[in-house]
Amino acid sequence: MIKIFVDDSVVNEFYEGVKKYIGKHLFTSEETSYFTDKKIKEIIKCKPADFESLINEIKNKSLDIGIIKKAFVGDEKNLYGYKKFTTKAKTQYRGYNLADALKIDVCPYCNKNYTYTIMNKSKQYTRPDFDHFLSKEKYPYFALSFYNLIPSCQICNRTLKHTTEFTLDTHIHPYQDDFNSIKKFTTTMPLVLCNQEKDFEITFKNKSSDTLQIDKADKNIKDLALELQYNRHKDIVLELKDRYDLYNDASIQVLLKDTKIFKDKGEEYVKSLIMCSDTKDKNINKRPLSKLIKDISEELGLIQEKKMDPVSSTG
Ligand SMILES: [Zn+2]
Image 1 (tube, rainbow, N blue to C red):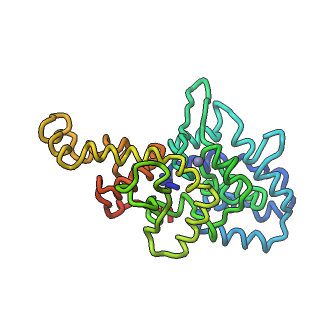
Image 2: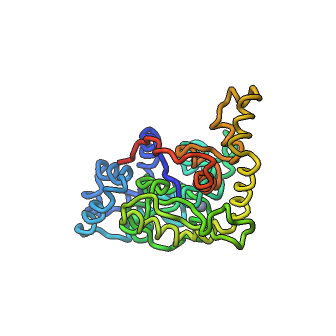
Image 3: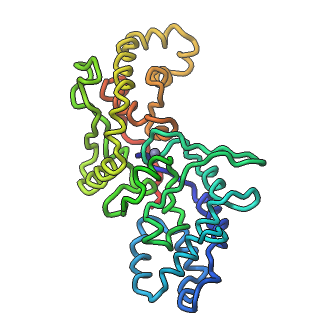
């Protein structure tokens, strides 16, 4: 799990692109008077922290959920709603445009699978799935809400999360919560004592003391089978230990002193080469398994655990 940071301009571009896709022509007078242009803007741009107040507001109106579903999710003809957003088109704002603007190269749910977007003027090749954090069956009016669309890999969206109900009370939300500051990868046995895969298990320990956040993170770990998945990567953890034995602090200092290119690029760069990953928290979304490699490298003493880089919040 890796937090997603987004610029307001991406949210605004999404809103301008999709607001016309809502099938307003299907509304009866009740829906028309509630779903004004202002309300639709509020729903499309609704931050996770405000989901609940909108849910309660809509619950207290006598609106037709079947009509809402058709208007916001769409039907088999893909003429409006989320379904229109996810069909391919070169000249209109679609899922590919959002994916391209977000630049999520690795799945925020698993940090294992690449999710980059490949498109050019003539063709759209591949993009991440968009998982509805709150399901579009239960909350159809959030089907086209920016912060309810989580760019993710197909395995997380279609196989692991699939129909499992995620809510803000029970799970970490990648636009709102920072899993990296709540949980840390570790091993059941200190790695210095391990020589083969059967000597240890990869697991998580708590980094935060916020029990509510820890409980939610535990739910994500369980429902996305993160421990089970990461234990298929013990080879990488053992290699990391061996690489650290090869390039210990003394040999790193020799490299830095004697090799111009390393002297110029600095110690952090050399360590990132040894880890085959970035050493900074803010870059753990760039490559698969970065959080595993960073956390285990800190445990091995290859890099020092730093105070979290200051990061902006989606509020
Ligand atoms: Zn994934």
